[in-house]
View 1 (cartoon, rainbow, N blue to C red):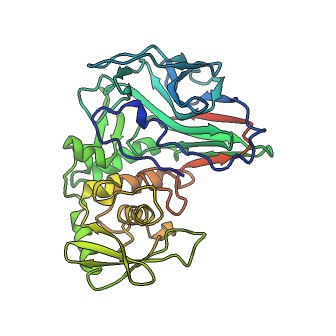
View 2 (cartoon, one colour):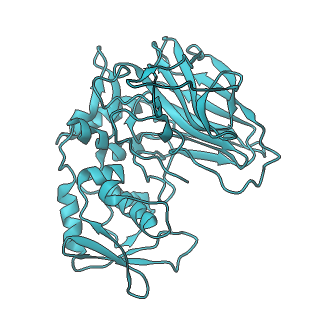
View 3 (cartoon, rainbow, N blue to C red):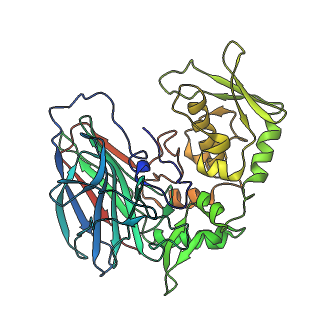
Length: 397
């Protein structure tokens, strides 16, 4: 799957919508997947405020960006401007607390946003839709309680996930009914899990408390992902440096073995630090790619010095490194990827944001950083012949 990527600009345009959702493979079930499938929105949040819902992304049949209404009908965005101009109101009312509502989900690669008590402020720039960027204190959506799920529905099926790559906020789970009648669901927090994540970061100290944003009554509004926290100055830029330095020292003498493809166990790459770079060689000893020593931001965002192009060498190695740095397994296991989550986040210097989110999920699955799918620890459900989909707004606890 194509994993979520950190949004690096303070305002991101619509070209990035859908890049974070999964794109399916060959159309094995092309005749079975209709143009829309039912999406049931259920509100178990305990929040009495009006919910507003948006289905936004790229219509796959045309490659055009826009939004869908409750019937699943597509509406293309009009032209934008500079500065960005208000977008058409793409919202529809979601179910009241304790209720549910069924709408039609179209063949998009995009997002389903939902907000409480207030509509989201979307704008259109020359390049497309401007998404909320709450790491920017001046973003008009900064004080609005909202969240989103990511999905792709195409001829090969449905992929839908909960995500915390950019922030952890209003809790929800996702699910579907498969072609064989079975159901799949992920993303549910443990009772009290929403507050526990925010409290855990506050108690962690060391700058992690800066990621927590609160509402007027002191309750959590959201927790910024640490990469965004670095960009906004809410967490120290060197928060992972001690661990990174220890990794760099270890592999100055030891060898790191990366086997990035589960279905290709004989494809291995071997990493060793040489001066200011970690060189990776193939089985013949030829250097195939090199990485500069990453900083904390590169690790959290899985980009920059850990860039992961869509290729068969550097990208897969980088994905593996990114996951291992975030989970702090590089010092305890020189054979990567390490898929055993019992050893994740055990170092004092680790991605505590990801640690706490995974720890509060009922099934342990989450998308707390871009390549959290390494080893299949992501909160994703998929079926090639989906009958319907579901998003449940869950209790704040």
